[in-house]
Amino acid sequence: MKNVRLQSFGHPAMIAEPPKKAQGVQYSALAIFKDPQEAHQAFENLNGRLEKDKNGLEQKTITFKLNAGTTASIHVRKMAHDHSLHQGLLKKRAFQGENLVDPKKLKTDDCDNHLKEMERLKQELKEKDLDQCNNHLKEIERLKKDLSAKDFQISAQDKIISKLKKDLEEMKHKKKR
Image 1 (spheres, rainbow, N blue to C red):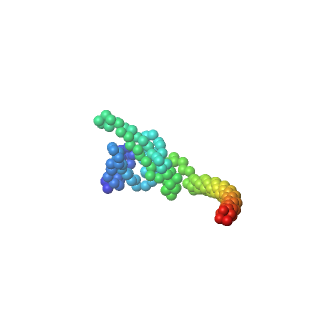
Image 2: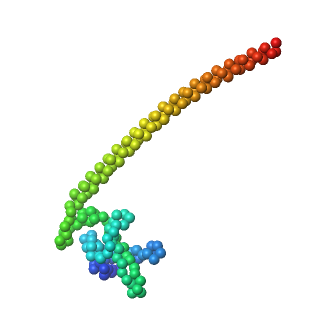
Image 3: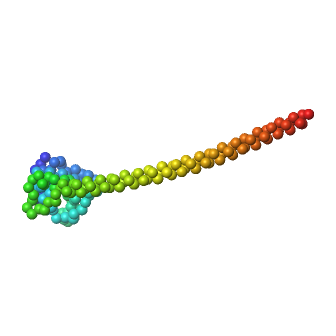
């Protein structure tokens, strides 16, 4: 591990692993700070376009001009959601002028919303299963009626065949005489 000063962060950090070439000309590196507050402050100090990555984590895109005259971009991503950070912040003292939301309230609201969504989905599934069962029962009843009609038709055909066989036998007997 190597100590470096990340100038755009303005904070000392440690690179936990050497930069890795990901795909094409993309590289990745991991900066580790001494505590979540320092990492949060370094992220806030960055000037860049705030976005969310595919996992919903905040990231800033910073574009700059290289000495060679070309432009390059880096994406600096938070490694945790903000509510995780708030939990850590409340255990320690807050940044100057920082207005913290009670993370317990945030967590409870999130849980309540998730529980409501789960209940709604359970109800939808129950209704869907019930509808599907009713449809299956109707189909079974329809198939029973079809089967009964086929049985009746087969029985009638068997009677006709038996009668025809009997008539044929009688005709053969009459010819022989």
